[in-house]
Image (tube, rainbow, N blue to C red; front, top):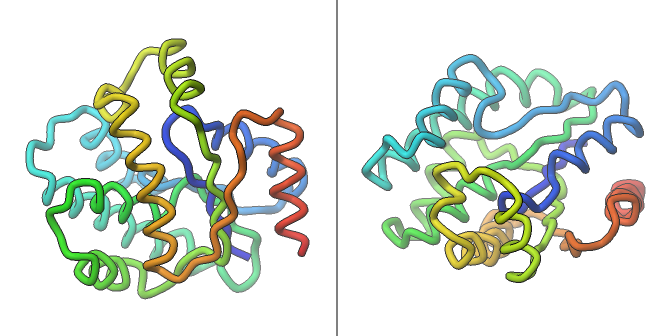
Length: 192
């Protein structure tokens, strides 16, 4: 089974992935962007805010996604549990928020990059504005987080639209719940 955890920065994806590793010790745990050697370089470029063009930013995400599919997902999809921190859903969500590409183009380009392989289920850890503002105030912000909570909340809404466009089952979970409750909700849904 291939699942992905989605959510805006500070939603708790990394914490939940660590918890899921305990339930699935043999799982392949991966992330987008940055799971491959090329992906690490792409991730560094994206987080540094050096890329001025939104189209170039989107194409970098696609390049990372294609390499990720080739090196990590495709070799393991038939015989391993795969848990990913983000997926094509995030890529499309960020691009939707920019409004530069048509929805059909976004889906088509992602189908090309992923060979139409997507997670069976995506878990969205959803934050309120108040909770997001608090969490952002507690850390040093990266290039994406510096765009502000309004931008990040638009991305959160776009994640829902992206999952619909890709016809992926989306499970929304309140990210303000306790870590244990969130983990249990994810596990209950995986086992159904």
